[in-house]
Image (cartoon, rainbow over all chains, first blue to last red; front, side, top):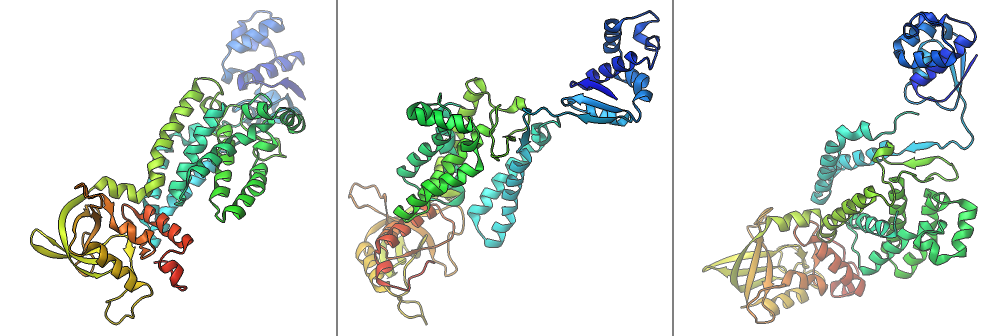
Length: 156
Length: 323
């Protein structure tokens, strides 16, 4: 089992690289940025940060397969998916006072979409006022369409 | 957010609600919306409302914290019932209850758009936010709040005329109308007259009103029809009028009658500004039609008032129904 602090995808890989090194699971000289020298933990950390994500994944990937990785918090962005793709079983520890957010963007857009649907109801009812309103909602939805995905909260 | 921001946003929401739901409002409901919009901040002792309430605010803050219970859907429902229901019962209209709901709800929606969000689903501690991305939300007291106020103000100014005239009414007004002057030569019944324009006699049907039938073939004389007809005869016979024929929509009905608003010069100052169609509704001599036209909302409001007063046919004809 590896235990790492929360952070970005790259930070998680660096922490895992250091944890695996502490357990002597690989030779640091296999990492290109080490350039064949002897390194201490701080030197290895610098080398890992300088390395590309692909290179670190290539190095520590085989060691992660089937292993449990405990994260003290939450991995940002695609961190969790990236580790799971390498075969690790990721367990993110939630803090008690951690804030949970509910993104209401989809709910707001559903309401706007319903307003668009009113267009057809107004046609059935022959209600001009409602038809104009639905037209405005349609224009608004169509205008905001490119921003829809941008407005949503990224997955924690 | 500042108190002014909440009030401006609440009024914007009220005008939008009124425009969409066809709600007729007075100054009372505008003030009530503003009052309801500052209520949720009672749980924040440093806010304007909290400062005014002093220890009550501190107690609420100690029990629930800021932006929790009083900023939730549960509180919205409770406040709407506790404040809105008595107002509904006293006034006999759902208007004031709706005002409380919209005012209070607008505060929750505005706070949801701030960086801190709000615990909308209290007792759950989850923070509801819109939009989801932090960088798009309003930072209270910063430049983004000023932008928010500006946008709310512009929307409020846009929605205000729509709330008064309706979407359809506004478009009909923007389309304009052709104006002609003529002399009324004959009054057929309460809502149909003949007008001599440029030497030609033209049957004219008054837009937006429907008086009970008096001369329709095969139909009995409607309740209060004779009174409506007599009033139109008294007011319009041989009189010079200004006809306004809207440019949008049909200019004639199925019977070949010109559809028009009839204006009178009541002050003898040469300005034909008094809308006779409106008089028929105000005096309870006519029902309103449901067709879209420039003054549909105004006529509806006047019809409602006449009905409440029991004026004309609304008081004299027990079976009187809407158009």
